[in-house]
Length: 354
Image (cartoon, rainbow, N blue to C red; front, side, top):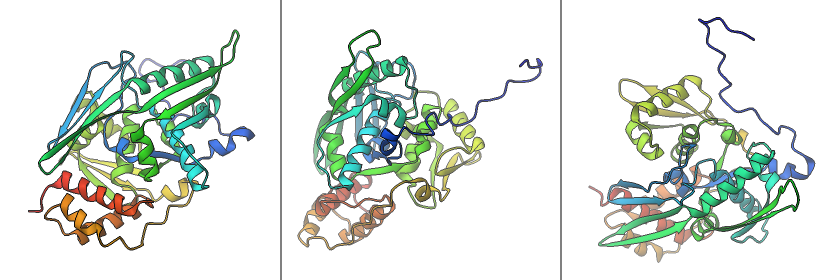
């Protein structure tokens, strides 16, 4: 079809088409699984939003806390590489829900992974999978945690190891991969620090759209709305582009209105971005939301909470914690430990009450 010189070619649809709408019978339980992601990954910009290899060290600082991400020689893990972790986390959470044993080592069918993440299943897609594993294994993260007068510096990776099995012969097609998740990722799963994603996450075309969705899911959750300045959103995104390009991306996202779960509005005068819950979240998810934890905390824990969050009313923090659990569909297995971590994080972000 030819176009007149004055006409622009039609734009592709905002979302990538569903490549596998009719899942094979032997993978339907995978294709219909609930997508899960760990919350720390949503909050911090660990992943590259570029399709070109990034080999420079990144460092982010905010309110006395810093995060440093060091890539391997093959580049920083990308937000598309993260699909592998989302798949692994989703499978582990499905097993935990059925009270089945889980471990840090996850064996995955390469084809099931590609179908789950709405990718093609050609030879180039299997090759890209191997390259993604290399970047995930090579990316290292170092961050500080400041408590009182002490600073703790921790280093960790996204995955600790990977093993690949492939058929011997001309095609050399991958059969399965075995991935060992890092302690950091696995501990977040065991403590139920996970959130459910919309299946259309894998249909978002642009890396920045995926990142903005993650931030909306983390901060807005099931609340009616979340308002944030464009500058703060830009910083949280980890984008290496200019603020002008980021502004354009947000405007375009607001105009197209295709972000799953949330409508996006951008106020040009105030530079504020508002995410409004579409009310589609529960309908879009395949599993019911976890019941919020409502039992009583051990009375001894309040003294520990006062130590990690000096100056704050621990009963106020408890109410905030319970509300947060409900909004984010979390049912902690170790409630006291989870509450203390919440109080510590609260104090690190806000300091003493004014």
